[in-house]
Image 1: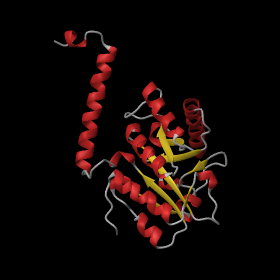
Image 2 (image 1 turned 120 degrees about the vertical axis):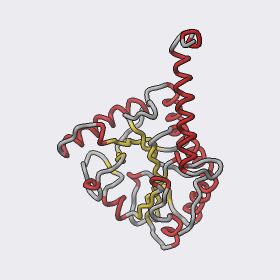
Image 3 (image 1 turned 180 degrees about the horizontal axis):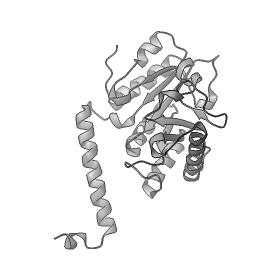
Image 4 (image 1 turned 180 degrees about the vertical axis):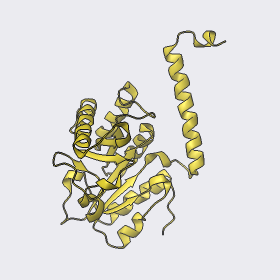
Length: 238
């Protein structure tokens, strides 16, 4: 397996590999099994800022991706002005913003419950993005929803077409389960490539270092928010 680095240059090289080998970059609804296609997908688990950097690289290369965002997460808030502005930039770069759904946020006892909650979050996301939302990817996905059409009213990134008929490659937990370069070399005509912007940086860093940096950034943001929301904070905490 090709040892892939988690740098912006390495990701740019991967994009160019798809492009130079004749893959058409598409959104999910554009899938056509008669054509050579790649779906670039990003699950935003931790940081919209990191995702925006990847979106800029894709714009430079001239390719488009689907970015999946969480409605309910401890790491970012889609309703803040800053988050909305970053989402607007990602969309302005030609990308699609769709729903990343965390099943553990709900007490779901049936498939009907699941569909109802997904559709509810989709409507919320549409209000934020002012764009149609009709695709879902699962955060910490349940295997029972792999290779299954959950509903005819929306697309799941784990539908059979995209999870089996397309070659699925992913860098989950900063570890490529299948090598995208091998997928290209082996002649797969349809690839769904999932990456997590959180792991990428200007230079190669370990998972330990990336998480440590993220914790520092989170602490800095908390401190900034405290100063913005509490008058004379320094005086108060003397």
